[in-house]
Length: 149
Image 1 (cartoon, rainbow, N blue to C red):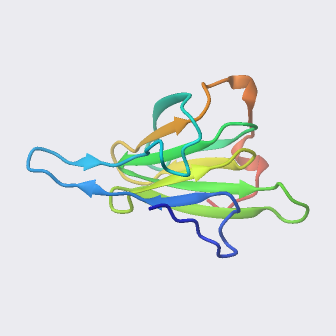
Image 2 (cartoon, rainbow, N blue to C red):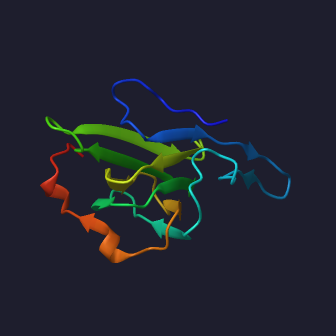
């Protein structure tokens, strides 16, 4: 079941979906995304990324792409910045890990940066609705968006 928070500190269009982990004697099965989920907007590509403990990967936003982020190993802090409206940007912080196993769905035009929290490997998987295209996204240096990391 998908949930979307409506509190004012949640960015409109961003969805956090609690996911099941089915424990097994030989290993666990971690749910991800089904074609019937409302957060599924097609399949373009799946990629994996690691981020070292304490390291921060800087700001990026996609013009058309919808992200579906999972953290199957370690812990990652995602910071989202919504500047789609006039006035002050709205920020949302989400920590994902196996202890907080959820899918983070991010619509187009939201800035995202993320930081490795756990020691060792912090691994994310991103299922995107379009094939990756460098021309479809924008990047900013970490200090170009003011946020207290």
